[in-house]
Structures are given as C-alpha cells and as structure tokens.
Amino acid sequence: MCFRVAAEAIQSNEPFIQNQSSMKSLQNSRKKLFFSSDLNPNKETPFCISYQGSYTIEAALILPLMISACIFILFFLRIAMVQIGVNRSMEEVAGKTAICGEQDAVGLSGLVLACNARMIMIGTPTSYIRGGILGISYDKSSVEDNYITLVAEYGITFPIRIFGTYHWNMESKTSWRKWIGWDPEEDGEGHGYVYVTKEGSVYHERYDCTYLHPSIHAVAVKELDAYRNTSGNRYKICRSCKSGKKKEGTVYITDYGDSYHSKLSCGGLKRTIYRKRKEDVLMLAGCSKCSMGK
Image (cartoon, rainbow, N blue to C red; front, side):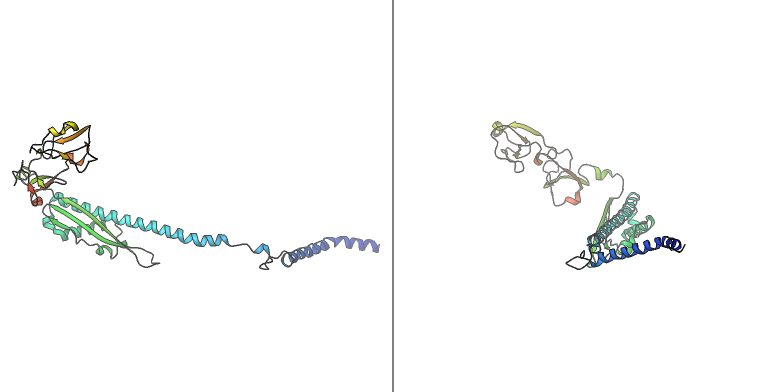
C-alpha cells in the first residue's frame, strides 16, 4: 500500500517537475544567448541587439527637408494670395474711376485710400505684407492727362529665419485711360493723334500714307539693276535679311524704299504702326509726304 501511495504522489508531482525543468532549460538558453560564443567579437555585444539605426538616420535627414519644402510651397501660395488681392483691388478702383472720369475730383490720395479699402473688403491677407497694409507704397503712381497709373510696391518676409531674414520685394502695376468720349477735333486727320512706326524717325498725320503701307514688288535678281525707287536711286541689299548677294531668284522691293529684300518676311517690308498723341512725339519730324515736313 505504501508503495502505491508513493507512486501516486510521484505521478501527481510530474507536471511540476516538468515545468521546473523547462524553466531551467529556458534560463540556460538565455545564458547561452548572452554569454556564449555567439557574442559579436568586435563590440562584445550580442547580435540580437546590435542592429544599425539606418532608418533613424534617414528619417532625421529627410524629415527636415520635407518640412522645408512644405514651408516653401505654402510661402509661395501666400505670395500668390497677396498678389491676386492687390492686383484685383487696383484694377477695380482704377477701372471704375477711369470710366466715371472722377480722378480729378478724388486725386491720387483718394485712389490710394480706395485701393486699401478694397483690399480689406475682399479679404486680401495684408498681414503677410511687411508693415501691413500701410507698408504698401504708391510713390510711383500718377494721374496725368488722360491716364491713371497705379503702382504698388510692397515686401513679404520669409516666415522662417534659420539663416537670416529674407524679404521678397513685389510690384503690381495697372494703367487705365479715362473715358472722355469722342472729340472730333482730336480724331480728325492732322489733329491730336499721329502715326509712327516701331523704328521710324518721322510721324505721319494720315494712316493711309504710302510710307506706312508700302507697295511690295517681286522682281528677278537679273533685272534688279533696271529698277529705281521714286527718288531715282538704285536699290541696295537689306542689312536685316542679307545672306550674300543673290545671283538668281527673286527679291522684293518697294516704291519708296532704298533696299531690296531676299525674304518676304523681312522686317524691313513690314510696318508696326502705333497711334500716339502728337505732343508725345515732338522729337520726331513730320513725314515729307503726308505732314509736309512739319
């Protein structure tokens, strides 16, 4: 009977003995892991905890760059918002004033106040401007004759001052001609307005002057020596389109010109005509044909 009880006691304690043996084996395995020959021979550190921190270094380098890029993008969006607001305000104020013809009454100072008030009304972020809305300078603006010219100069400061303070100087400009209606005396031929070309040295009182609209003729190179202009002079090679003297082919001449052209697209055959007030071109002489050399 005693042997039977002892056997049963041994069987009941068998799981406990097994648990103790497993715990001992786990402790032994840990000792083998940290204190056996598996150690890193260079740094005497187990391999399981000697991983390199490459991801941490990459994150430390990339994250500031990403943040800086986002700040730059937001900064240029800020500049665009300010520019849109300033341009819109100036266009609306100058345009309405030019149509109503009231700039003589309000003056330049009144236009400036109207522009600033319009910026506030449409929600322009003037807080981004250095000095706020009072930091906008209109010194280059003018109200002269029939024109309204508004020029706004302002600066925007970069929000982050890592390597110092940086400012971006901006300028917005708009020009309008006031609506004064039709004046028969100004619009008549020889009164008020004249016509000039881009590189011309004279002004023309008539738009249909033959100097402004030259007649172009295509002639053979072999027959060129037989042609003369209205002044009786021979034609010489054009300085703009010359590519060596042609021995054959076609060239282009005009009645009042003094050069022949190898290309029909040459600028010497074209006229860019501008209509200007006569008092603005007083430095030019009058055309001998339509202005009688005035």
